[in-house]
Length: 333
Image (cartoon, rainbow, N blue to C red; front, side, top):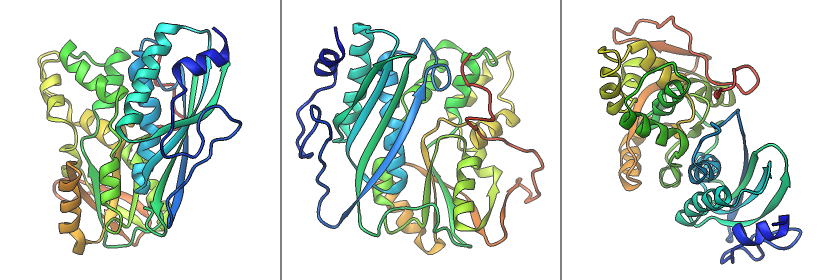
């Protein structure tokens, strides 16, 4: 099978909203009147972002999910995406599974595959996604204000637990490992919540490298600081994690490990966002409308810096480092 047959068999589909899709030198998109284009690119590299034995349908799902999560953080609705794929060789069963996972998530969110590229080389996946958002309504990182509440969607930490277990640093029963691994390999982009937060959230970011690191992007862009209540963040890890590690060596989950996973674990693809206290009811309504739980975890402050406090309001001295692509060790063996 050659390159163009590969594209035709696995990645060519009719488009409904784009003016022109796969097959020409460029795709043509038609955002609706009064809309701005939201564009984001993400790359997944074998041995850096995923394990070699990951199921191909899960890898296809995640490759698009991490991009859709960026659109969610912007409050945008997906339109289309392009796929650049480097393959060591043509493996048809792998391609079938990868395309199935990729396109199932695309169909679920009405996001059309409109172009890209393929080549031979080390396995590498790069997706660029396009969305639309009403002009002037995009959620940005730069609008957080002192006094704003800080929220997080869903649960954090499961992906990090799975990573530790797969690296042999933590023993998890098979059933519990599968639950955590699904969160690592098939994250759910919070698109409905992001769109529901337009006009409510003052800022937003998706949590890819760890809560504290990604929240730091909001603080830096907005020129503010924050206080985080670690009592709230302890509750962000899924209850199943406590059940899981209660069976590990007959001891409960170490609270310090909980904090590490929730505050700096990464690969969660939840949303962290800020909103004025007067809009707490509106935040709750957005969460309900999008069927997405949210937790208030802290407060934006005028003084720069990120401060953690414990149940007694005392400073937490422990340092938590989020993932950095050039400073952190590779997450996979």
